[in-house]
View 1 (tube, helix red, strand yellow):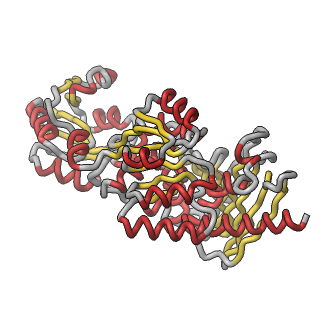
View 2 (cartoon, helix red, strand yellow; view 1 turned 180 degrees about the vertical axis):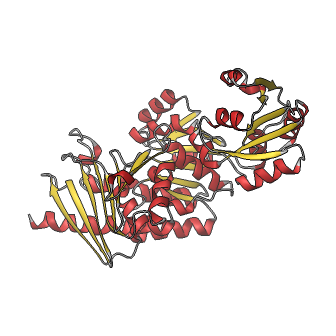
Length: 450
């Protein structure tokens, strides 16, 4: 018996997939088809899958060509499977020509011609809205945003708005955007979604304005500095049937999602303490050290430090208290937020002029989880127990700067096939704004008391 094996995502199953499987079957007597998991595709950088794996498996099965269907979920599995199933032929589409030549050591490798004029990417473009996004602001985060966007299909970054026209022009030229402007109405007329990368004080203002103009909004953190502002924005987005997302990239990273799943599974028992730290030694003169109203370490990094606390312990804390060191201008250069829950405690630590170990520590009744610095770029963590021989290190891939993950979820949600709200809910985002409001009030009282 001559066995043939092939692999694919088989997303948005189309005639090209059908013909490829038909030709693969004709190469032998028994066809094994590997269907990739969403997690594996994410690790490979493929962030735009639409159909869930069970649907993709059923579509392959329905062709009648596959004698056996398996799941591909890790790098190196092809070599393992070829040996395990004693495959005689490995085959895949011709757009991978040469990529799998290393498998010739184990079996014959055949690249099959693709069906011209059809692809999953084309079907996505026809079936779903191409998001034409504009960036509001042209600072540091905006500069990291554009390169990452190129890894997400269904998205085009078209232009930039900045009240300082020269800054907008330099940014557009550097990133080869179609347009730049200091006219906000002109800007809104040319896009259907915005990324707000302006200073903190403008987040609420621009988010409300964009939503009122019928645009989807991805807003850098913090979305708002008061609970009332955040509630108003989410209510407005819901009323207008628009997507509003706070851009905390860690929430969308595969490693962080796996971390939360590990915690929720009870691996370390009941969680009694969460400690999250984000500090960075920042040069004088930057916005976060000069904006006396909205600057400081907690507004800059607090959203990240709050994320694991709220995701793991929930929103119903009993109290929150703040301690901080202030610069001469009244901005916090180092701050701690202490949370008390009915059966747990937590600490969020941020700094601009004080450096500390940027780790995340989650302590439970059976063990603890340590996520090393920089934990907010979660790519590995260790589950630790009293018996160190039972410790387990878990690693996941973290691509680029991580912004592509939140962008992918944003685009998916706009097009109606996203299932990502659980990663950062509106309620969690509102709770963060509420904590920001409490912190700013505490800082103001401390300044007035000096």
